Length: 164
Image 1: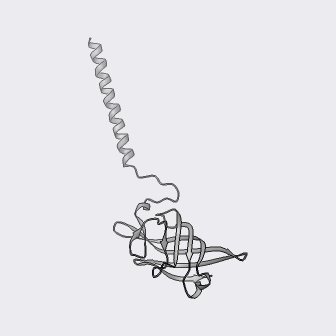
Image 2: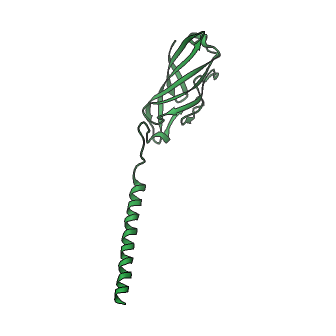
Image 3: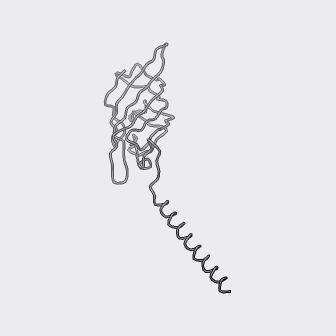
């Protein structure tokens, strides 16, 4: 009888020890930082662009580069490395209704690579402040490339340079 009580007591103590160890392991696992794969960033969920309405948007699928008349809009954007120092999207640019250097591309559809850089930290978020667009398409058997550099302000994108 004494040995049965002793065995039960020992099993209870062993069970408590195992439960305690499992609890510690669980607490350590849940307190561990989120693992990120190469290129991913812990700031991914709090990193934004400012659109033409002055709203903060995260990894947008559509983004207007021309705030006055929406004549330069990026669509179907697929992002890589959102939240990292440099994030890049590929998609389609609808590019038309502009004057000056871009007039020759009026009403055109291009493949686009949209790259955002220069993150600035706010109190609770991070915003990208610079961008570039590289538009490509084939016209009459020739590859046409148009490049733009942008400042991303609190009121949306503002063009810095354009090169064809």
